[in-house]
Image (cartoon, rainbow, N blue to C red):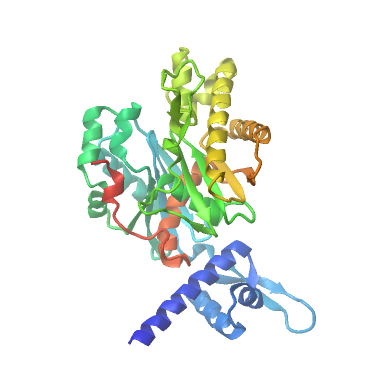
Length: 406
């Protein structure tokens, strides 16, 4: 029995490795995969044939190399599986319907101010049904679940003026993961929002040759993810790269009132800080989606925040690379693309001016998924609970200790 179990486990692991290798390659032949993974061609052929029979891989043309029969090329079968990914944010819910190739089939956005847990569960239930209605009956048979990418410690939103204390207390008192699983008739998977976004960049992004990188996502608040040796590093409490609390020098913005001499990155590199800075100067805005309407008349104020943000992020990067040897730092955001590009240029210029003796400064790159990164990360969760080679990453489980601060 033990030997059979080990054999089955090894076969499942090898299937995961093959799927991961095909995904990274785009298309690959059996000999390509055998060399890359280190399996015999005979063993690799059995695995690929089995995955093709299951509808997870498909042929994608042929390639001739030298003398002999052309080799079949294989790719991920897009309609092999489907999932719904959800970004549960502080100002909105974003839904994406994704196929097995990571393509977004449909998406939707629902804004809110300060929902109670019960209201949010109702929103999620109806939003998921809207997404699933876009699948045919045959496709519904290949639906594997819902992945929710969300910040931990929702009850702390009151401290950031994101919700009233009485609603925040409801979030502290509820086991949100358990309540949601009781209400929804689907497999539900949870992950920290920015860790999920880092996984989305790793698996579905366009960043090349990035197996060791720090991921920074500038959203309503700022968050991070860490990828080491090609795997998402979650940490003991699934809270690795929690950059929001990283100590940084005090902000120079006149809208910031801290006088302690030190601050945290969340107060320098977050969209909430940008909105507060604009509001401090009498600009009528309370959501980043409205930035395009006011930016032309308030460009100087936005530029002030960007300079302050860039300095905070540079301090963060220098702190991290002092103990992490990284190839890249990937920065993405809900900001408009042109602002993110400008912000990254500021960060690069400031890094170039820093003393870096005894340090290898990583490349700084713009993320490739933008405002959809977190929701796509959510969509990965049910897919990779079945098909990720790293069994410690992105697995189903309740998160009562991480969703709330008791």
